[in-house]
Image 1 (cartoon, rainbow, N blue to C red):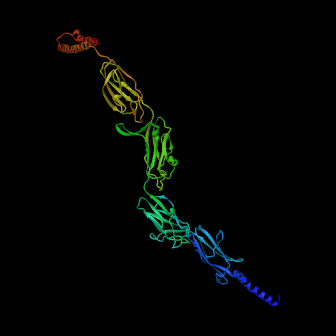
Image 2 (image 1 turned 120 degrees about the vertical axis):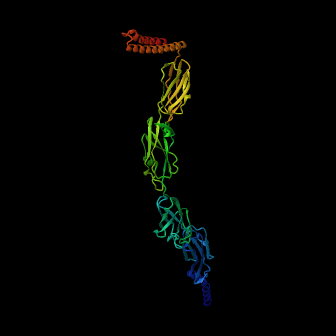
Length: 509
């Protein structure tokens, strides 16, 4: 081949190879520019990116370049349309990367931003939920800075982002920043003219935004209730022991008594829930007899506590006292004092004694029976008497422990008794059986009565005659009708009198 042919061949190859070098040159000069991206802090969980490719200063002049996109650590994807969108992004930091690929990697562009879809909120707490004070300290804690729109502030009662509903208001002069843009404290005044009630503390609505643009939203803890109560706290000591009226020394008194161990339980009901435990209340109680033991059960929100008196003797007068100054209610008020409670515990049965003022052997038809109980009794009447050989004529109550029954004898032997368990004392104990009282009754024959009456008449007549004779004799002697006294005149009347007395006694017998 000659020189001219070689020259033309060389020129043809050079001409054909020029686009290849140009492409490589285009790749070497290509770059990518992100035109559209989300905000550095975005409240959206989606993002759209738009970008353009530059090669040698010309837009989209890289004809043989491939473009890939990648989000965070995910796989690469083709994005030759110069636009891509992502949905359902999680809260947190994200990185987007777009790269141009030619015969070799030429260049990439990256973008980093933060997704924050959670709106800011604040939590309210107070120094006390229940109080009797005139004000309460309130703390406000934000979950994140919320400075857009002016942030949290409280310059006056009417310009405060902490709202107060009820008998109270904020004290703006007490507003303090504990941690900038995050924590604050302020005092809330509780009206002194209101004895008890509650105030509701609530955060304002939509008063600020966070960096991502989320508006403030109330949460469950963005409100708080403060209960105030300055009333006196009372306690009612209830003991389930029956009361009865009893006459003592001509005075009617109320007596609380029992013989049942189950009745030794008592309960304390407080008008307000208290802060003390059952053990602390037990330490504030005292008893004159026995010991006190706690009873487990429903406390009704720390308002009810039960106890029992144990280890008592068979008869005991029990007094339960309560030291109330150490017991504090939930708002902080001491419990008002109460009077001690006194009751009688008596588990002994009692005896009853029957007696009569008549002789054991008598001719009287009406026989009085005295009934003496060792304790005052209740609901005793004549129907509880067991009578044999006679019938009841009268029944009288002298006192709660003494009764009189009049019984007429019908037979030679009258028997009276009181069975056991027919009546009870003030504590509920039943009586023991009484002694059995027997009275023998006899009657005098009619002839004996006639003779006795005749003898009595003779005795009275003789006595009268003897008296008159003695007076007459004495008068005659003093007048001198007789020269000397005659023993027969003065002694015989007296002797006749004694003879008549002896005869009358014999006749009566």
